Image (cartoon, rainbow, N blue to C red; front, top):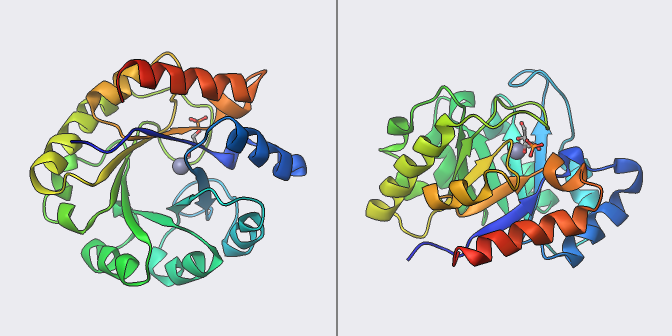
Length: 224
Ligand code: DX5
Ligand code: ZN
């Protein structure tokens, strides 16, 4: 039985001048977690925030923090993110030479261990580490920016990852990140996603709460 499907709004598209209010909005509307994108200007061509900001945000909500590290050498920073309050820590397969070791380390520090793959990274590379994962993130855009178009090929990759997890690690969440909205949310869930990241489709909507509730309604209608 796959895990219940969760929705995590991405704060990348939120207005940080009003961040407490922006978090409260999605919390009230039933968000299951908050997705926090850390970018270093090296792994991706953009910058966001590090552990200091995560620690400050931690005071604003009890929602789980799903920290997506788009940074090189993530092994040097995961302890700091965990200490800042990260519950799930996802690093990129492409960003470290020792993914297996780092996944084990994440569990040892009490985090849920996540690994992400870029659109050009095949799912077959996960075959020897799937048991070490609590979450696998399939990027459905090239990482670095919100508001990009969903890459349809990600649906095939979600199916492949779901099948791998069903066989070897059924409790593992399958996360999809990038371009998710009402036009593809059902297809992403049917392909196997159990954790949906929604940035601009929530925070750039005229009514973020209505947008999030509509996504929830559509997922629930699938029986997810
Ligand atoms: C992009 C980030 C995403 C981003 C998604 O690199 O990893 O989490 O916030 O934004 P949308 O949902 O607008 O594609
Ligand atoms: Zn992300």
